[in-house]
Image 1 (cartoon, rainbow, N blue to C red):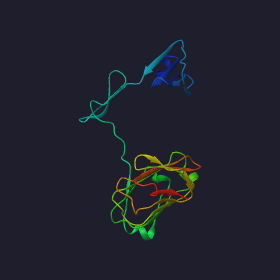
Image 2 (image 1 turned 120 degrees about the vertical axis):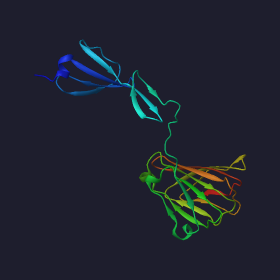
Image 3 (image 1 turned 135 degrees about the horizontal axis):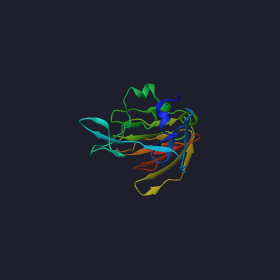
Image 4 (image 1 turned 120 degrees about the horizontal axis):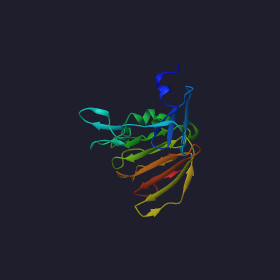
Length: 206
């Protein structure tokens, strides 16, 4: 004798976001399909319930359908920040695939530091980071290695420097000012660097 659930109707379809639904057949099988939706005889469709979030109750089920945050903000995690300190001049900094999205902040007491990124194949497509000067002329030059960099740099807010390419990205601090920065993006094969600086020689690739 089949369980009571399956005695009521031939199959059940659970719809998720109107795109994919889960079908529970009378043979106790589970099947996931996508639109276009099919019409079945003796089929009952169960629409996913409404989800409501309140600061008093948290996430609860309610009558209807859809999602209601009740004026609350849906917020993700903030990006990590790595503040470079004087000790990093001797030890250097090495980032791995899990450091995707890190913001490197170069503070006033920073000396020259070597930053090593994961290889482009290890980092994977979509890996990125930002290196930002948080003070004027914070110390020695910063070098970034780990792959081949394709660099475009805009200086002084007006001129665009000729494209650079190389395995070492250099941020020269002699004339750098707070706000000079470079964003590094990976496509799984190469790193692409987009720099903005107060002078064209501040960020180079060689």
